[in-house]
Image 1 (spheres, one colour):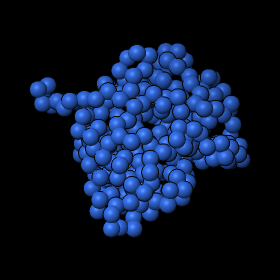
Image 2: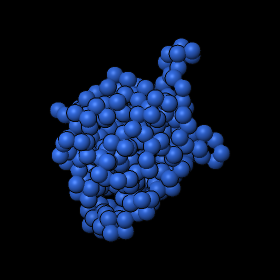
Image 3: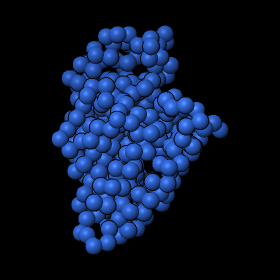
Image 4: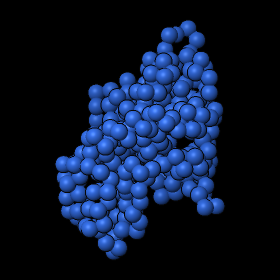
Length: 280
């Protein structure tokens, strides 16, 4: 993607748009929140297929907005997904020159991980946090198959569980959060997944690096989860939907707009706000 296209005519502003993906711009069937009558539901575009099954969607209007946004700004998908999970998404518009995966552990440049960035992240985690093996040992010792479906490690950087949320023991998450926090890790519950992520592994650090490389002078961001909070705080303007972990805790900031929309409609509205802010 040409970065010159991201500078609106007649201004000195180059806009970087850093957006979370899942439950911010793209939505699984369970997260669509189609609360309107069936005949009024928006047309949907599938943007991800996994194991030959459709997995993630956005509205057709959102797809058009995103295609326009990628031509007008430096659009940077910013996700906790692994590189493999990210690369099966087919977003509308110009392919992003930069993408951030593994919660900031990888910066992809034209689809290839920047090795120097990744190695610098690994060194920082080794210096500042308990090792991943210690976190995994705790998870193995304190969980059981009655409510945990899968144990996963992402990019050798962080761990997550896939859980039966309705069976999650009432106080386990708080106990795990306190224990992990003392060891330099953050715990986040997102849908059916419990993430344990090193505190220095942040989306905001990777976005600042991309902004430096592209010369962006305005950063816009959106996200719905606790792992997006640092990203939203680092942006010049930010948005969050009316659903998600941040909404559940009434999280806010002076430069943050809280949207009333929930589900896939929120993704569409976020893209409208991005375009309006970039044009302004």
